[in-house]
Image (cartoon, rainbow, N blue to C red):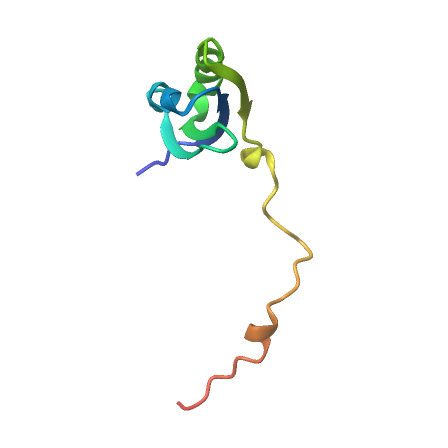
Length: 92
């Protein structure tokens, strides 16, 4: 089974009641009442289209893509875990 590449979009809105319309554009992960933003995941193929569509909504103040797919996660000089260093197999 092949996994689809997904990317997060942060959508800033004016009122909490607008979250229902934002839900229709992707998978809603989190919505903050205090800071008035929602985190929505969409397919990377549809990212530009969904961002344009969300920006056109009257209650949306701005739309920001997540930069997580661009960040390198393979670390070359990572320190080994100290707990595993002293893990001796006792017994058998």
